[in-house]
Image 1: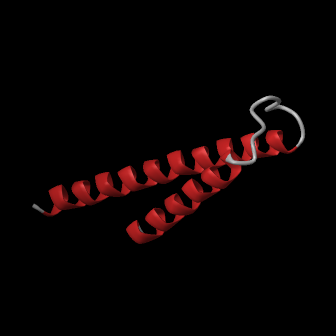
Image 2 (image 1 turned 135 degrees about the horizontal axis):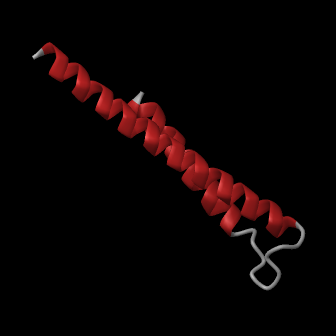
Image 3 (image 1 turned 180 degrees about the horizontal axis):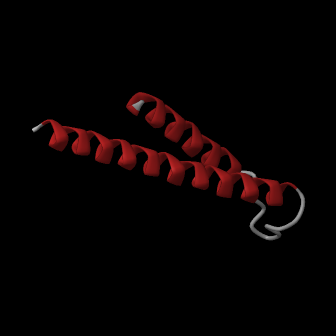
Length: 69
């Protein structure tokens, strides 16, 4: 599971990087720039969800260890 979250995080970072190059900073809310901004926000949401998943898995393993001790 840890490897999967790392791979998905890297994919999200690549998506953010690619879409950051498509933003027209003179008019960021028009045309293709809007789509790029929406995609960047979606990728950031995916990163946050993946970090929450990783933290919850760490908590789950710690709770299981305490129960067995």
